[in-house]
Image (cartoon, rainbow, N blue to C red; front, side, top):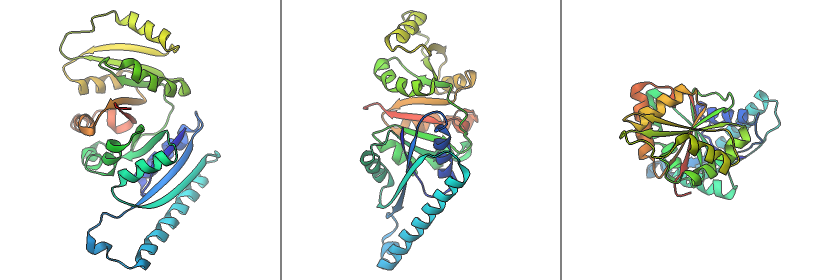
Length: 274
């Protein structure tokens, strides 16, 4: 799995790097680190000499080499890691360009914990990356630690279920993970068919036995996901969404409720169009 990790050399971006490296305990990963020198500063700050620009680039090169040395020191596994440094704005655009150029499978980014998550994630570079990425984005909360991925919660309204499972199942198979499909019945209508039979059909159709289907009667999708994540001790949540507005609601709710969802486990987002 080829993982692109944008880094600004902060502790938060190091969270994503550590998670990706630890993921390499269970599957083969190749990491590509990207540092984008943001050129969106006010014009007066950019009217610098060529020497200033070179100094910024040189500083970034030093920081990158220090980061690579630190990774090598802290890890005994021989994981392939490459990097590049570029300049531009917005950062999300250059993450997308780099992901396409390097044929990345996943973009992995660190996100702030519950106390300031909405402020940090939405209205930040992370939001821009999620919004514009054509490939899946794996967001790692600052307190998340990789301990294997046994349970993946996938919330579905059953529209495009087969198409989305086509995307999820290869990833789940790599890790031998359970796919916990959660259907929220918030209007008290319920699924018209036989859930157990549908579960058996999915296992047969996709030749994968670790699929479980659960229907939860609750008047809020967000509350339902948060409750179910706790009930099954989930290691990851997967969502398919067009834009970040739904994700913003999820994160905002999680902040006020102080639930486990966004404080400790990763969120894997896929664009519905993909």
